[in-house]
Every structure is written in structure tokens, then in C-alpha cells.
Image (tube, rainbow, N blue to C red; front, side):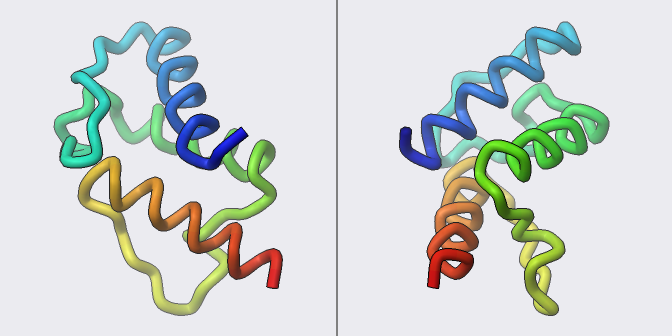
Length: 85
């Protein structure tokens, strides 16, 4: 399964569990406008570390905070490539 699909599935699952209404998920969606709050993102990052085997927020000295969903996906895709190398 692709990184993007895993992330999207986890976003939908966290939103449902936390009873949050999600904005339509598109690459240009600003994360702050997604409908998820900080607790949701904490849960999401924790689950993605379990599912993808990486946490790009602790794996590097240079922390880049994604602004959009596309940025978020790209960050995880790059972290998986780095981890595999």
C-alpha cells in the first residue's frame, strides 16, 4: 500500500474516532483547515510511525513543518526513502 493511501486511511480513521468533520482531502488542503485538532495530529503521527516505521519529525535535525496535506505526504514519503537507504 502506498504511503499516501496509508496516511489518508489514518486521517479518516482518526477523524471518525475523534468525531471531527474533515474538509475534502486534497494535496492543497491547508492542514490547519482540515478539521483535525492538535490531539488528532498527535494520534495520527503516532499511528503513522507504527504503520510506516518512520517519524519524520524526530528523524532529522532540520524539522520542516508541513503546511498542506501534499507537504505532509511528501514529508513521510521522503522519510521512508531515507529510512530504506
